[in-house]
Length: 356
Image (cartoon, rainbow, N blue to C red; front, side, top):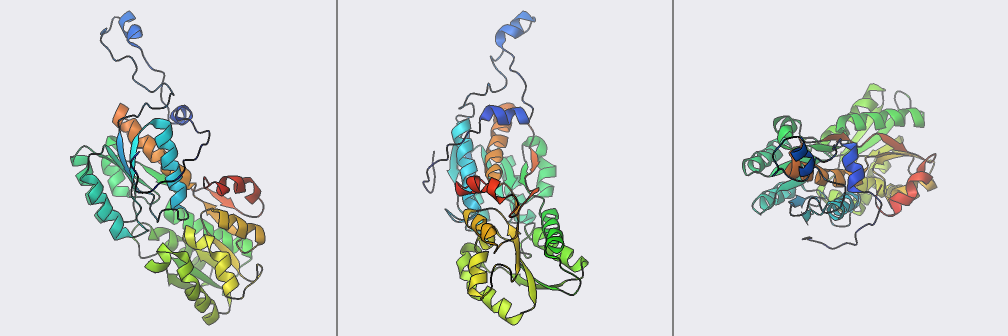
């Protein structure tokens, strides 16, 4: 393994065989079977993996966890990447982008200049910039697949060549979270809510827009704050901003943080603003150990779980299946579940080891 950082690999019981079964791999045909049927006796002994580890050995992949090394959400994706690397035997190099779109694109160009067979990256750099990377990749015979943020045009153009997508459908996830917040918090027309998001990011901003649209359709007054780059990279840096927003808008009844790191920091923000667990309804994206603690203590009430571990694991599998056996790209929606006080106990053990 080549990596820009070192972290102990999770040892969990996800097998390549199980995942391959879920995407429809068939039983291998042996040379003996082919010969018996009157076929070419020189046929390859197996045309599909047997379920043993290492069947993707020799495939070189550049993988992008998205955020800073060790950061919320990014580390879950990284753990998924590493587990797939261990299970499948691929050779993976990691690039940490600090949630910076320009850095993501620049690192993508760097990766494409190296000797790789595939690249698994986020789409938050936008369709224009990331689509150009995809074009260059496939021209070079490199499989380009995305996670977390869709690139619909790229997927449509290159799915047959292996381009896939694994993640939540951003607009739908944002809309559903806001609608659920209205219901659970008992909000009514005229109530004031704070949305702290990334609406300016192409593709990625669709999720924030979904939150805003659902709130406005419910007749709520939305106070919107764009996440600045300093807070994007280090959520603790946003504490003064949050305190100032609640001070200037004392009628805010609910807060949605459209960012895993900010959601994990919501208890810190509310405490700094002098708010108790029952003063403001808190909702956001992504499960983490800190978010679980905040849900248990009442500072965070509602979280969508995007299952970031799968957003790391499955793109590596996608590239291996395409490179080894010519499969087309996978499209998998990982963002269907809500976590609340009612079910957080079931999620907490996995969050503690950064799988959920």
